[in-house]
Image (cartoon, rainbow, N blue to C red; front, side):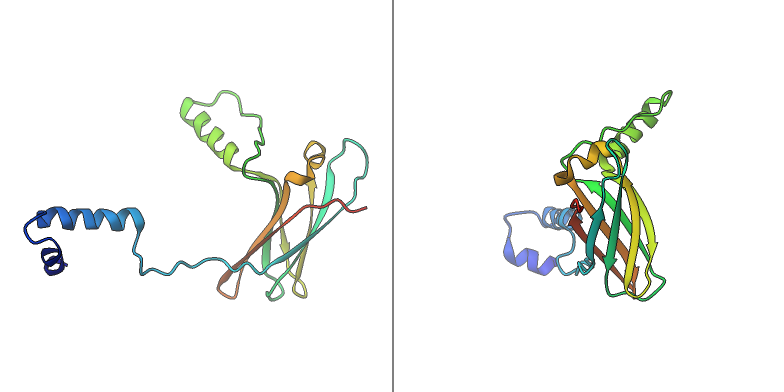
Length: 164
């Protein structure tokens, strides 16, 4: 590195500055030779819902199909889009630091319901209860699923649709 740096900038920029700024670039941007291990987007999700009665929580049956063996645990959630504010009630009497952490966690947690399902025959199924006030806004709801199977991470997402 030192030889290359001297050849590129002969006498114009101090070598120590080039080496220090080069180290900063790796810190900021990372190593360009590293291959990122991204999850496989290979889970197929479908939902089936039925409004039971006005004002009641809505049961949503989420079905996940994917390339996994029986017995794999699949995490399923129904969430609002990232730009939608959920607005959860905060616990009373928190210290300023704990209140800040709670607000941060609340604003970043977009899940309205979560469940864990176990696969049988390549399919996992779970029923999640969505609060009625959110189900009126189905255009803002998405079902997400992820699991670890065969040493890989698998995930998928689909909009929640109302079926009669």
